[in-house]
Image 1 (cartoon, one colour):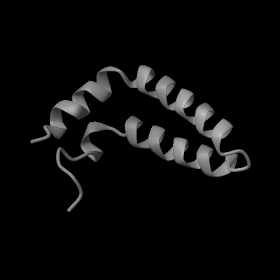
Image 2 (cartoon, rainbow, N blue to C red):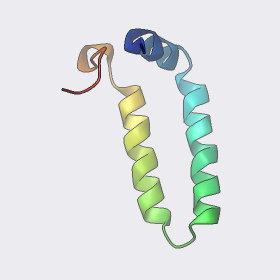
Image 3 (tube, one colour):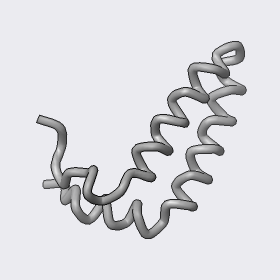
Image 4 (cartoon, rainbow, N blue to C red):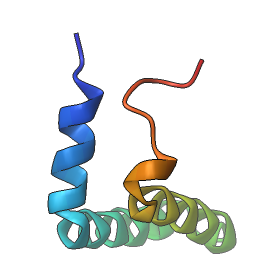
Length: 64
């Protein structure tokens, strides 16, 4: 079973590295799916916002 609390802690501890990985993935997606830059940027922004949320705003489990 997945321990979402542990995943959350690791994301919090490595937020900068995760954002760098998202940027690399975004660059690769933009090369592969040319013309969809705005959609890719929107998805990256949402992912980065989710990572940057405060602990009180997060839950340890999947959405209900």
